[in-house]
Every structure is written in C-alpha cells, then in structure tokens.
Length: 396
Ligand SMILES: CC(C)(COP(=O)(O)OP(=O)(O)OC[C@H]1O[C@@H](n2cnc3c(N)ncnc32)[C@H](O)[C@@H]1OP(=O)(O)O)[C@@H](O)C(=O)NCCC(=O)NCCS
Image (tube, rainbow, N blue to C red; front, side, top):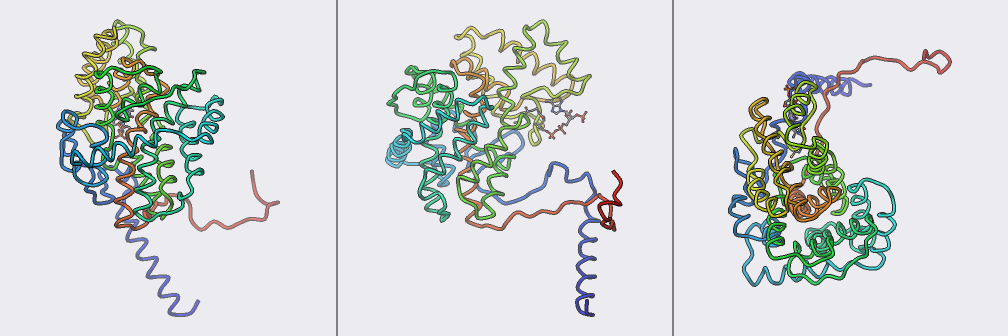
C-alpha cells in the first residue's frame, strides 16, 4: 500500500472505531426508539394511533376499509365519487384467474402453516403478473390496486381449499363482505360485515412495525412491489408480530376455563413465558386498537355465546396489568371477534395481512418517493486477527 492509501486506510479505521465506540452493545437491541425514516402515513402519539392525521377511533366510526386504503395511499379521504370508482376497481380484482386457483389448490394441499401458504401464494401471484418487474410509482400503484383487491379472495380460497370445502361464487359491495361470503360460504349480515370492516380498518397500518419496516427495506433496494409484500408477510408471520392473534385463541383453549386463568398467569410469570396478545414495544399506556376491539368483541361474543372466552380475556388483561404492568395489544381481542364471526384461528394472521397490505403498500410508495437504501451497521463483538490454518492442522 502506498503512503496515500495507508493514510486513507487509517482514516477509515478511525471513523469506524469512532462510530462503533459510540454504540454500546445493548442500546440498539431491537432498534428500540431508533427513528429510521420520516413518514406521513401513520403515527403513534402516546395512546393515539393516527392514519394521515385522523384518529383510529374517528376512522373506525366513520370510514370503511376502502376509504382507509385510499387515505393511506393518497393522503386524504376520497370523495363519494372517487370512492365509488375505487371500490369497483378493487372488487373487480377479487375474481381470481384459473392459473391462480390451480396454484392455490396445490398450495392448500400441503400441510404447511397458513402464513407459509399465503407467502407462497402471493409470491406465485406475482409470477402471473406481466408487469411485476416494473417499479415506477404508477406501476406500483396499479399493482397494489390489483393485489389488494385479490388479497381477501386468496386468503378465503386458501382457507376453504385447506378445509376441503368447495369454492363459492360471490357478488359483494365491499371487500369485507366479499371476504366473509367467500370464506364462510354464506352471505354475511350487514352487522357482521360492518364489524369485520371495522377490524380491517383497525389493522390497516401501524407506523414502522416489523413488517412495514421489512417492506421498506426490501423496496429500498429497488426490488419490485410483490417482493416487498412477500417480505412483509414473512415478517408478520412470527408470534411476536401478527402471529399472536392465532396464538391467543390457542392459549384460551389451552387454559380451558376461567378458574384456570390465575394459575396460568402465575406460571407464565414465574417461567418468564410470554402471554400472547399482551405487551407492546411502543404503547406503554395501552393500545387504542385493543380498547376498540374489546368493546366490539363484547356484544358480538354475547350473541355468539362466547361470553366465557371474553371473561377469560378480560381476567388475563387485569391480571397482567396488575402483576406486570402490561396491557393488551391489537391481537388480544381480534381473534375473539373473528371467532364470533365464524372464522377459523388458522385464518387470523392471513386476515391481518389482508388488511395490512394497505399499509405496506403506502409505506412502499413513500419509501420509493424519497429512497435511500437501508444499510445500518452491526456492532462487532467477535474475535479479531485470526489466521486460516491448513485443513489438516485445524482442531475440531
Ligand atoms: C410485543 C412484544 C414483542 C414487544 O417486545 P419488547 O418491546 O421487545 O418487550 P420485551 O420482550 O423486551 O419485554 C419487556 C418486559 O416485559 C415482559 N413482557 C413483555 N411482553 C410480555 C408478555 N406478552 N407476557 C409476559 N411478559 C411480557 C418481558 O418478559 C420483559 O420482562 P423483564 O424486563 O422482566 O424481562 C412483547 O410484548 C411480546 O412478545 N408480546 C407477546 C406477543 C404479542 O402479543 N405480539 C403482538 C404484538 S402487536
């Protein structure tokens, strides 16, 4: 190395040491409190969740899922005329092509996890789109409209085929109605549709959660839209993220009855086991979506004869709050709402994805508008200065 090269190397090394010495090993674990980007899509302000400046309570009471998708993608709520056209466009894509249904038939014949099936299905859906490698904003918007329209049909088709049930032909006025009819095989009531639609609104976006971040990281490399969504689905699958809603119902079945709750919680605390649907990285004073879902689930559980489950959940909630200071998150009561609607636990996380595709898309659009590839650093704690030994001299 010549003199200038040597100085350059030393300067680079000094810079690296400077960066690394500022980062204590534990400070960034899980990127807690790290701001990784600016965003105008959604925001958590203490116990309030905002989509584009509107509170989730206001949207849940006054807007439907399609309006919220438009809001997240375009920044403002649609006019009546805009909504009519947008809804019709989304609903057009609920009809799946024959090659897609064939693929879903093969995928659903496996014994894979429902989210593994969904991940594969959406990836396969991308293979069938002739424009899936086009990454200009207008192409991505077009792709997002098609996928968001088709998403619920894909989830419902996988669900029915996996349960050995025939597919049903559906005509519906909203994505919520379409999904319930396609998945349950019968037309839902207005009340059921409204409840499910509200659940979709509540799950549509959530700032820089793990799957939204995944979607942004993938699209920051200038990869295509479907790749970003498939990455996000993989991220949502885990029980620490979207997979918790299914786990809550399994936990209730495992506990069995109200009388067993206290012992179950005691054991979980002693053994340091996570209680599913409890706790949150950002909300320390309660998740507003859990509050809304608690109320929504109360009346629907009464009608569906699921009061015991509701009582078990509210008892777990108060036990966890008094003993650990932890509160429920969105996944705690959502599964009960879906159960009361007649849906299967194996469909809960795919349903989460069916709604969250709206947010992932908005996050991807925002990312590509002002892109820089995500490339953080790792704080190295391994050994230095090792030398390669000849194979015969290596010690096992
Ligand atoms: C959401 C979650 C992943 C956030 O994780 P996090 O911010 O990294 O929080 P930690 O896992 O570091 O937990 C902090 C403390 O609270 C405890 N805690 C957090 N969530 C808990 C839970 N669900 N049950 C029991 N204890 C929990 C941890 O054991 C830890 O306690 P300690 O300090 O005594 O060791 C976590 O609360 C969790 O795993 N919840 C259950 C899964 C779930 O519901 N996921 C859906 C999220 S929307």
